[in-house]
Length: 482
Image: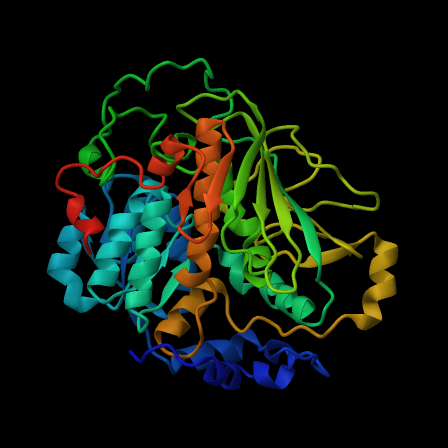
């Protein structure tokens, strides 16, 4: 496969140069959305990318279905530690020619010359070794959000991608290739979004750990390991914990040792365009505002965390306040209007990813010196509020290009040299490092002062040590040296 194409080539190939918006100006007319049949024919001429898959059940199976729909992926190898699970059995049946493994390292050893790209859909803590091995062996990588569990692991993945600029990387925040990506960029370049001073990001639906005992003083006791599961391998680099159903399947997200809580799970769907197009980088101060049900084992019942970012060029200093937990809402401005959950928010096992009654669905409220904006999650577009102000501004809004591909297509097309990946590690990595710093503030329940230049925490030795966290388990050290 060819290397990534240049930005100019991408614009010419995609037709977005004609639209003008992507080049920094305003388009005279919005490009017509390509018909599904034309898209299918165009993709058919491109062939397919040979893909290896790590993590086939639950969310992994849902994402695999999306890759299947593109018609651009040929899954030749698959791997999971729990092959008897429903999702794994479905994946195996859907790809009978693919070779199946339990250990991703063996998959690379035996099939490494048969695939060009790797999709990593494992729990947060185990993204790191899979990604590092893939990049080390010259494979393009798509990894689920958040990128990793620790700041240091994210940094190592970012640097590995920089050393291999010919390899395509993509984070799994699928809305970053949808309508809001193009709209936010166009509005920013047209001066509609400017002088932003504050953002409230909110996710107030029920989470897996809600209802756990917050007076916990030890990890859950051992339960029988599911038949056929390699529970030791499940841990990869992390220290061993006795099996318990509060870890697997899916519940690992609840625990500091394994997951990134609501912030890591939903932050990448809520502040991704804000972070990229407002050039936020890393915060210099992270302050716990309020925690309910705080403990040192799993995430609080609700959290309010403030992140401060300095001036960037001609953009003013700004802050983001994160709100999660039932009833823990940000101030809702007058004229906010209706809050809907977008149709593109995925379901798992037929249940909505945010299936509980809330006053406002996950989203952001963004304040500038002149305007207030609201947005939902994933691919939801940004709106000016109140409605009267939106109508007043309507004639000044630029035309916005239609998406040329969805997020999964974008990755595969980037591997083929047809597009540029929207959530590459230089974009996705620093965003996820913001979440890592926020989770550290949650775990310690203390303010963090962060030096953006040295990437060190200067006011708390425990927090500074937590940037790297504990050493890897014996036998997994090699991934930190790649």
